[in-house]
Image 1 (cartoon, helix red, strand yellow):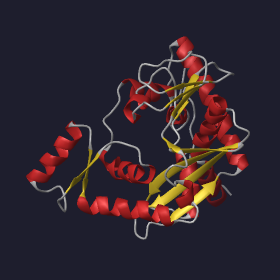
Image 2: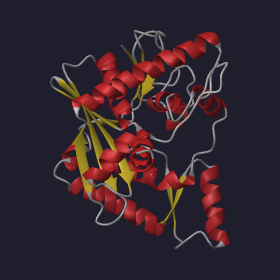
Image 3: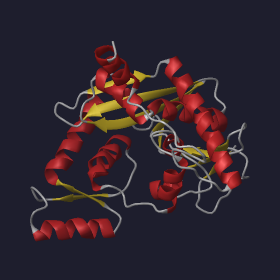
Length: 293
């Protein structure tokens, strides 16, 4: 393992690397490795062709994510510089000019009312009996960039844990997510909808590869963006993690094949006959029972 602490430090291409000097922009711009979001984008409902286009033609970050980035910075103590804009909304010309100037200088603009809400969320995290000690300042490191090579495919991978605590015999990673609904039921659906079980498995594997600890635990911390900013802390069931790892391996094999052949297929791939399609299984069964009896 190599730990790089300055931008010019490089490591052997095949070995695990931990870097604490990369900005989020530099991390996401790395095309020599693939991230969890990239692996998820290769599999349905995504496809390699769309993944490659999006990677080669990156779009500006969505402004609706600004609030989450600010909350991350207040909770983790790391992230882009924030500029509070003391206006109630963006309707005035001066407010918009201040916002645009902040973006131009690499800062995240946020209205005062939204900044106050983000501060209240961070305070709720600090007061939470589990999340508070988990993110306690000085007990972990925020947003380390970890690179390693997958042994089966030879693909270079990367992860960036929000928070990593190195304890005796244990590496504990915490992933902080803001959301509209942090109830366990909504969290369960979010894991399915966003394939967070793939994120869990890849981050766990990356930490194993880079740190070689006795054990690794990965914890999700979901927090509602609505007062009183309730929090759900959960670890993924092992079966779901196993499914996530299997999905990652399929995506890694697909990515390795695309790199080798230079062919990035769409959803259909090379076929000579037009494939059939049907409704989702549940609807087919329900309507068959109703109309085909």
